[in-house]
Length: 160
Image (cartoon, rainbow, N blue to C red; front, side, top):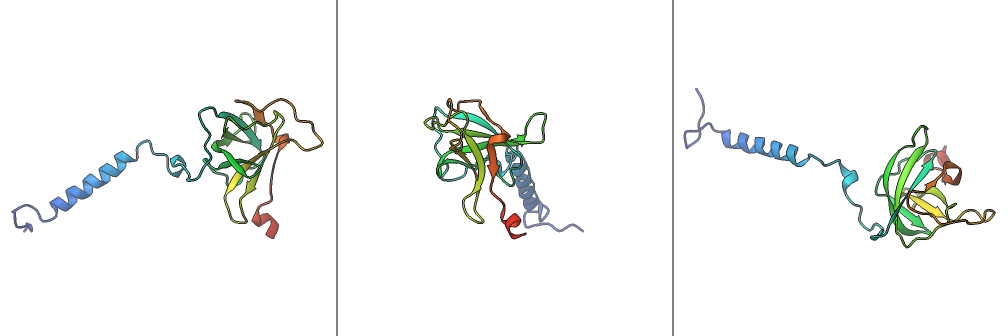
């Protein structure tokens, strides 16, 4: 014998319909959502309307994530847009977007840094070492090659 509610309909049909609608709604709303990487981080740098994009090659990007900060002299000036493998190599290629007001020489350097012992990772852009004369200006589409990049040691590396 089948249980029915007061209206003569099966007892849990309304609950089942609501559950099915919620599942379908969640599935449809997730289309095009690529996870947490699509969400903007609060307090990021304003890259403005005249920003430019630079590719940076690293030997290892550790746990750097998209939307991480790009800084010059500890001041946020941009954000990491994309992280992947460089074409035809095993180097990591990090694409960053930098505020158009930031002027760096074409032979600028980049390194991965950490805001504190357990803090966020970010990309630091800087002038070349004092032994090298600055030349040109960093512009849209430029590449900072692996010979001009570096990273700080990780906490795990220091402790081991």
